[in-house]
Image (cartoon, rainbow, N blue to C red; front, side, top):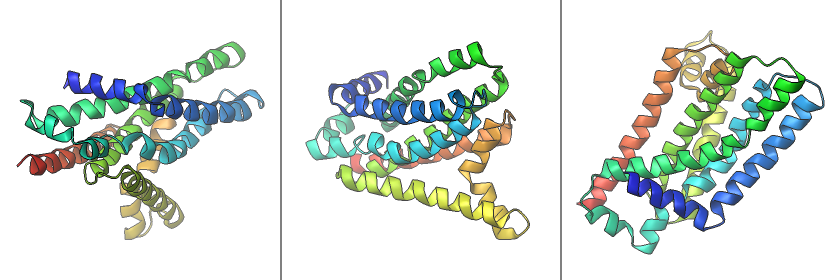
Length: 234
C-alpha cells in the first residue's frame, strides 16, 4: 500500500496537476478569507470553510479523474492487478495519495490561524471542527471520485460523472433545507445530506453519529472500488 501511495503521490507532482490543484484551491480560498475575515476584522472562519466544500465540489473531480482512468489508458493497470498485492492495497494506496494532496492544500490555510490569533479571538473548538469537517467531507468526495474513475478509462468521463454526483448531493442538500424536517421526505433527505452534517461539525459540535456516517460512506465507496478491481483482475 505504501508503495502505491508514494507512486501516485509523486505522479500528482510530476505533472502540473498537483500544483495547479493546490494553487487554484489556495487562490480561491485565500481571496475569500481576505474578503470575509480580514476586511471585516472577523475571527469567525466558519463561512470560509462552508464555501470550501463548494470549492472541493468543483476541484475534486480534477484530482480524482486520473486515479484509475490513466492506468487503464496506459495499460499499467495490468501491472498493478497482476502484482502480488491485494486490491485493497491498491485502493488504499491511491486513496491515501489523494488525501496527501488534500492535506498539502490545507497546510496552505495555516497562516489564517496566525492572522486570527494576532488580530482576533479565535474559537479553537470551532476551528478544529471546521478542519475535521473538511477532512471528512473531502474523504467522501475522494472515495466517490476514485470509484467513478475505476469505471472508465476516460479521464473526462470520470471527471464529468464525479461533478454530476457531487452536484446531485448539493441539490439534495438544497431540497432538504427547503423542505425542513417536518415531512418524511424532508427528514430522509436531511439524514442523507453530507452538507448538513458538515455544518454540524463546523459549529464546533462533535457528533459521533456524523463521524460514523462520514467514515461509513467513505468505506462504502472504497469497497465498491475494490469490487470493480476484483472483477478486472478475474
